Amino acid sequence: MPTRTLPNDAAGNPKPSAQRNFTDPDSHILRGSGGWIQGYNAQAAVDGDHQVIVAIGVSNQPSDAVHLLPVLERIQANTGQLPEALIADAGYCSTANLEACEDRGLAVYISTSRQKHGHRPRPSRGPAPRGLDARGRMDRKLRSVAGQASYALRKTIVEPFFGQIKGGRGLDRFRLRALEKVNGEWALMATTHILLKLFRALLATA
Image 1 (cartoon, one colour):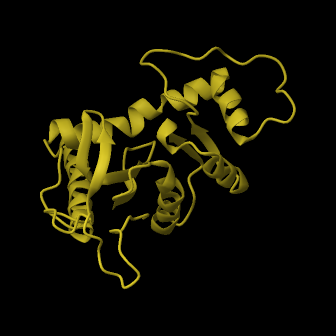
Image 2 (cartoon, rainbow, N blue to C red):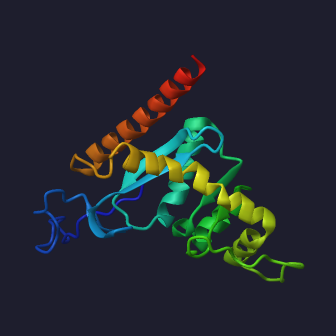
């Protein structure tokens, strides 16, 4: 996963203004839903049929966009194949990501801009204009009836996972320090999530 390191001089020594004296120097300032925090960026890819986690990762990079291709690589490594389709919010949208997905032949639905809750973009009509770049093609795709229906599935696939982790189980922050340990903690959260789903499924069929 992408990582950020402490600023240092030519000899590799951290600069006086670096975060080496912080409780967790691997962490960085990130913007979350509640404002600015000192922490990490946890990533997860979830299967659309059963809400099974197929790839995870943690980094100290604030941007989600730089994680899309590394997560795709982890999905392929873990499952032996790329997904038939991929849905992601506007944080993952970049021209490079869209073009890379097109090159891989993936059916992707990545929002090109933040949308207000409940707001639906005007549907696209008629033939597509010539000369659209990757972002323009994606924007038009998401404004189609089929595109809107596909992107709406995101609310029932990955959002419930994060809701269950943070809201249902109260795992809204990492307890360990240092990137390597936090990666292990995130893996434990994801593993127990899957085990709980399997346990409940067994109970339902008992």
